[in-house]
Length: 112
Image (cartoon, rainbow, N blue to C red; front, side):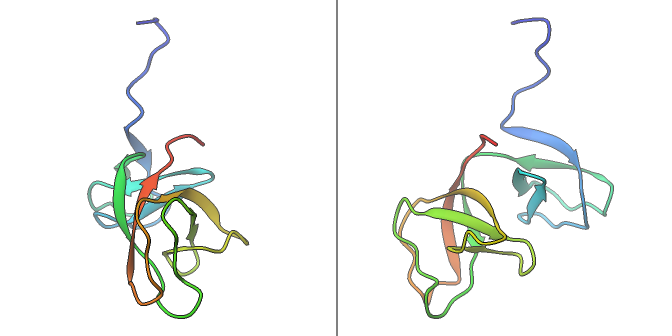
């Protein structure tokens, strides 16, 4: 390995921008990941930056996803959304999700 190598990128320790619980999405600028433990605001937390995860989504009209569709994170409401407006792209739908579903299976995109 090159001597400028720091660590694998699949899991990273970051400073929590707010209190977070295990499984919660942490968003820092364009960097995002799923918290692997609980952390208070400004404490260290390990995030998983790739892989496939089940994330909360709104249910109701116009909230369905086709498999492979872009998935965005709505920080205001803390859920996955189909809407790109004012939201951060986090990955793609691993499987389709219906309007009535309250969760979506997302393949996180570890590239920022």
